[in-house]
Amino acid sequence: MNHKIMTGAVAAALLFGLSACSNMSDRDRNTAIGAGAGAVGGSVLTGGSTMGTIGGAVVGGVIGNQVETKDKK
Image (cartoon, rainbow, N blue to C red):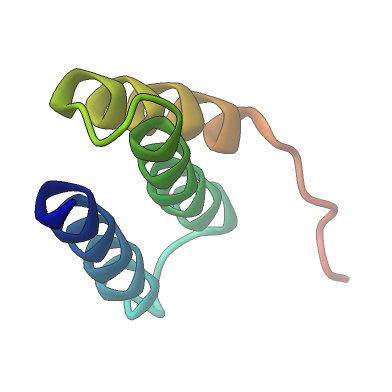
């Protein structure tokens, strides 16, 4: 139980830490958000497994990187 809580806390801390980078491009920000969300999802789905967390972060980061945002003009 403690391992699951610790993994979730670390993933949340990474997500919040990365969101503090205000000079990121939209693509960088989407990648970071996707990786954080993927890490949390992977951890939850695999019961806190390290490989599940890392795999979720990788998949989420790739998906976040490929999300297109409309230019603000």
